[in-house]
Length: 186
Image 1 (cartoon, rainbow, N blue to C red):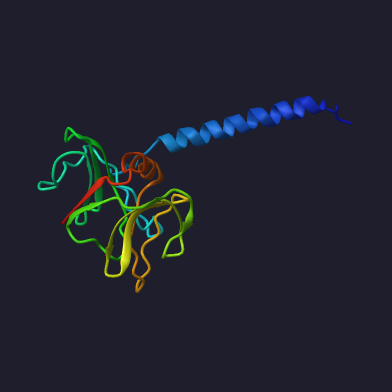
Image 2 (tube, rainbow, N blue to C red):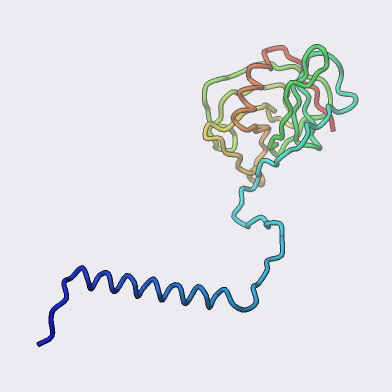
């Protein structure tokens, strides 16, 4: 009858065998041609957010003809807001997500402000609402969604909400007190 090996010897033997097998496979994989990957830019997926916030390298300049002095400048064509101080220096600039009703170019002022959350005309919970004009029977106002989302406007519903990312909404709320000039440009 053959001698029985202790269990640790079996485990050690199996471990050495496994290491040897992996080593052989690694040597075989290292031989032969190696594929190379071409550098490509990632493509956005179909499931990406409908309104992703783009990365920016430099702040966009304040549009010509937007006035002087302390003001909020909103460009309908660029979907962008600038917070400009009394010395005409840009304090902050950011992209926004407009509703379906755009205000006409011109000078307005922040009328009423509502900090607490309410439901917008599109059914989204919003806060820090700053009304500055009425267009086509719809109030136009800056606001941000309580949950930070930026849902696309619903087709067929007139909405005047200009949505901002949460951090930018906080900055605009601090800057745009009642009576602050809002200049809308194309």
